[in-house]
Image 1 (cartoon, rainbow, N blue to C red):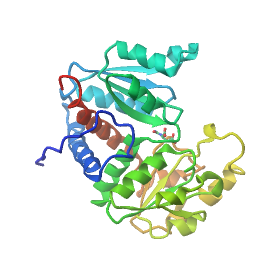
Image 2 (cartoon, helix red, strand yellow; image 1 turned 90 degrees about the vertical axis):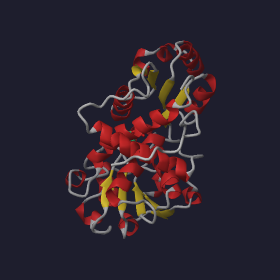
Image 3 (tube, protein in one colour; image 1 turned 135 degrees about the horizontal axis):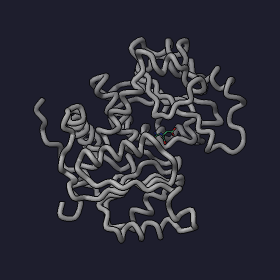
Length: 315
Ligand code: NCD
């Protein structure tokens, strides 16, 4: 496959999908396609980030996102350090800004940050000299998840333009939903959100999405069914009557999936609650792209790190 060099990425940080243009998003997806090829080779090492230091700063627990950023950095030749909240001085009352200043003094080149508060990553980016990547901030944005979802869709459907995508479930607490709505619309898809009123942000229609509270109605003619995790750790108070009820109305099972297009594909960012938002046989079934999303996650993170590399000092 001949690769045409993607256009250079004009930003020093990746803080969100908001503010990116369609060609910038597509450029990252093109780079990610090339990174998939690299990741499938025996020799996976590149030297774009050789000599560079990448810090993964995670204030919230994460398995797949953190390991995916770690592998991506290592495949590009960076020295990667993982720092998680449990082992940091945040527990001792140090503020986000102090932590940023301390890390900054260690002269990293890239900091990948996950934080439980929306906006924390933007704040941190203003306090450090290096590039910052948002790995999820509160219910705000999770740009690399949206990029890996777009890549997975584009590789399986051959396009994103004109597709009907349904994002289903706990939209209220979901940074994945927010980033995906912005990204998929920028790429020309039509987006619906489906969920109980208690789990849909008020004013969601302002995003230009169609809103459904009846999942059976909402799934009709969809090309992509994107399920979201019921984020019980973010709920104080009762948003759903019971898990059993929730599954009955909003869990994706074979009967409901049959209402989408016959060639519809199923996605989930993980971690999944099997039997809560998705039936096990659907998660593992022929229409599921969930495993592939994980592979695309490493490729997209390689693409983002590589795109930012040209903005690093002496880059
Ligand atoms: C998502 C997240 O953390 O926002 N997961 C992930 O990045 N692997 C979605 C979720 O937690 O449900």
